[in-house]
Image (cartoon, rainbow, N blue to C red; front, side, top):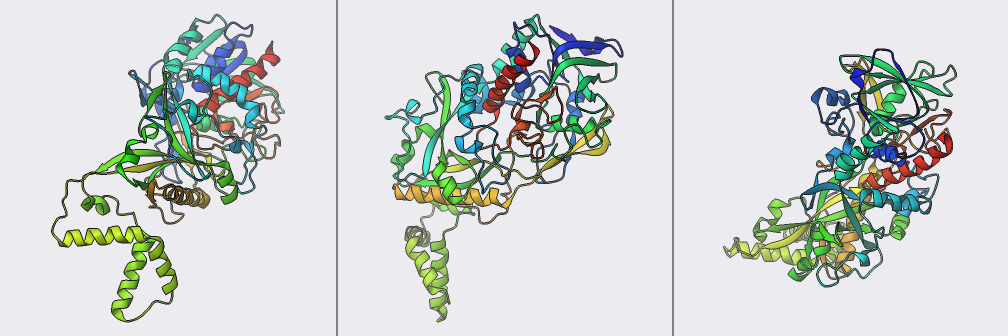
Length: 550
């Protein structure tokens, strides 16, 4: 049943068994798990069935760290939540999002990744990942490459070493979360969805050990109360910590914030373009169908990407990382250095240094190093010399098409307590403090991406597949760096209340009946889009909640 919260009389108290705040991917998944069960469920959504500018404006806030999307555009504040922003064309007139489980290593405590480690392993979450596959309609569960490649038309790249691997991403349509599941929820007798219902305060008893009720306000209108046995916050990685920080009447620092952790450890997936892969011959380009574009295998949209093996990540002490190969065609070699001025070769640079030194009659002190660079990069030196001769002969504009790939990166970010969400003094139209996001990128995040490119280049050349031109030089974030609208980590999960906001069951430490669902509980984020893990954790939490309310 859908209820317009603006019709609720002032100061009414609504009583229910379970209250879910937020009707996005996590909230919708949770609510569906209770269809046909005994508990009465209230699902509170700030927006309506369609977007409206005034409600969306409640998300506005400041960005004071690494440049980021405007906060009022980074999320969607209406029924369906951020699933409304899944916009990748996946065929059959559908749009959706990339989906893949986190890797096993993502759950582990890694001594080179500060604050890493989940309270459980991937094997514990695998049964819930299987349920998530069904919910997201991307079955079967397998992500083994042999189950998705076509050896004749779309085979994996034949690397000869064991450092680089092919991985599979699937794509799920947004329709289940924006059309089908909302319809199921509204038809359910035991689920009441309140639209235009903005939670502005979490009220507790005098010791802040138990939540008693929520204060709900409507824009330009009434406010009322909602009382429940159990409460679940599923409002996303920015709004959930904001609500906890705003609820500070009993606990002055905010609920669950006795150790100053709420809002800290904001992590994203680093998305950026860097590096150019030039295949060794046209046949390599023709045989990369697994990676070139989204295509359907057994009805499921998929694409192949490249990643590093766990063995390499451990040995090199790197964060997890993957790259997508984006086909690109350059009409003439003449334009190549102008289109990609960031491409450089140590061999060519050292050759120029030695050439200049010979002409001047003075050998550089590091002659041996430069000579080694020239020998190692002799292919690049030869290509550069060939281009120079051809230009002098007056034939720069040949018709040959150079086929290559640009690299689209998506990588893990090291949890950083200084990357955080806080409150500002400015108020929104509901008189609530707005948020300030200070997104911080650590040097290891960038250096790890550079090393990943170097390793991929080495393995491409070893296998005779071509080479990768690395464009990044130091720990400075690329100018085109952005996030993926993936807001994670701000109410992180840990069994120790001094190291996390929620425990292994997603219950807020120290509060008996308050739980959190969604990506804000992720201790680390891996490189995979968070959708499948959000859904898996929501199913897992629903199973736990059922034991408490039935």
